[in-house]
Image 1 (cartoon, rainbow, N blue to C red):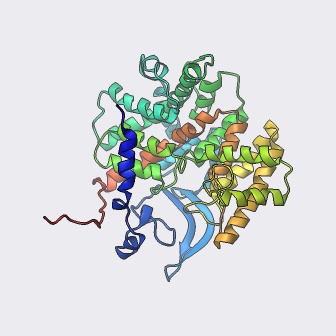
Image 2: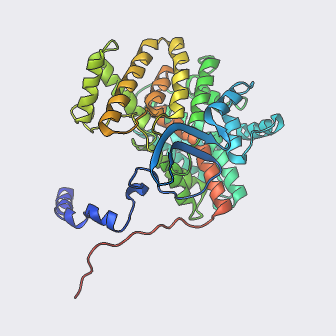
Image 3: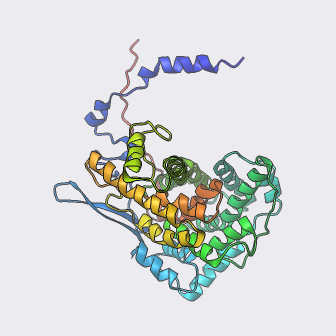
Length: 441
């Protein structure tokens, strides 16, 4: 007999034994969620790979809001994107090389790097039928986790934590992620969604962004413009510093000297959460609900009324949140969102979504203005607000929104894991303060 309800009743009855009074956090100077009282993140490491700038701190220790900037190595994001976009190549692989090595590659270095990645696209023999097609998952992020972990058994040297072996393993997984993610989606759509199963064989003559679209749709069913937009999306999501949850999770696990597959699987589990990588889906669902209810021609007052209802927990998921508004670091602007907004206009014209994009922009301006006013601080829309919409315009299934984040961010995980091995190479072991009661016999 399953008595889980009794177990739950006992647990909730004893909840006060697990509740820690708020004043103790201040008394012992413990930072909830590794956040300082002014909202800034607790510094947990040093890095030369990526810098996320949304504020400065003055000589008195006060937080001063600033326009958002994202640096990959020494390059500001927009300048880097313009530089790689002006070349004849898609830019994501160049950004991968930059994050790993600290400089942009020469033509020969880029060719060598791409050649290696392409040589690793192919999945092990029997892997697709044995590990993916036979056992779909209702959430393919969990399936991607499992698929990455199963790569351990295909590796001749899986437990070697050396820098060289970690680099080899990481690049091999990154190269295989488009196939793993698309095939996991296809398995779910076929077995759980009763759709036709069409598996496109892996090609080794195209870059990662195009490989994803080819595996999803087949040859001739996408345009170069769509490849370029997806390549941009991958560049924007490639890294976001040590402090983002999935990268920090991968560093914590990697610090134990476990295998790379376990570190990446932990990061995927983190990214699945709606407070992290899953936010793009929630933003898209929220905006679809709003548009269905008030229409694209809604007035300022109608939009503001919806925003007020969301904040009062009376609309959408009743969480009290307006998704896509605000960020843990960025205050005045999110540089990724600014770049997306610019390129979203191009996609919207191409795909016939110009009116919907205009609504998104109006909604963001009204929401940021109102929320900023009532909270007394600067609020900006973040990258998730537009990314789900752009994926939708590119006709990418919603199930693949967050997996695309995995494909893009894995290079950031790898770069930070390697940097940690080079410079620290110690287990992450923070402390906690015991505030319970001892039993005296």
